[in-house]
Image (tube, rainbow, N blue to C red; front, side):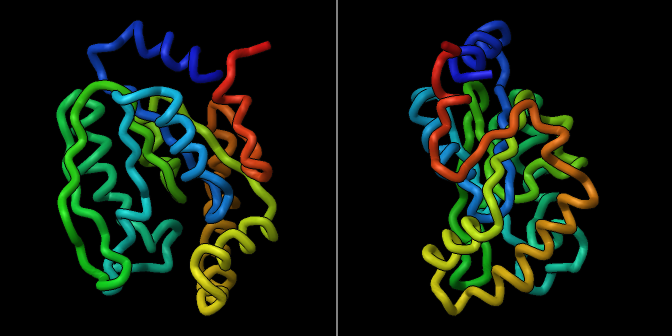
Length: 196
């Protein structure tokens, strides 16, 4: 499915919020795709980043997705929007390990929820369309180190990437996707351009 098809699908039910998930491992290209889709879909599109729902340090667990507050994504974002009600949430402040300013999301239009673990099994029923972005491990690690710095290599290799692998093995989120695309080149023609 491409952007034009998404718009056509949404226009049939334009009295509701159309929820899109973009999942994939860290550094796969999810945020880049979300920005490109937001631009293509237009001004009625909001992007919600799962990184804004990183778990407060005292509440993180070793469970799959345990570093993210998935319950808060569900309660504050997905539930109200799926009932066509506005949503609001507090952004996680990575530097201070606390919740920061409040963000409001109006009901209606497209809402893209992007980030690792956004296609956990308990969240799947809320989405109208699901995308898995796939990129090789070495590419993802390189992107992560370029973004976060060499001092974060251990966090990437020993925590985040191991957790993501456990998620893939346990739930196979790509299987639940409506479309799987490559994030290696950043070429998202498959979703952004009309069929040729």
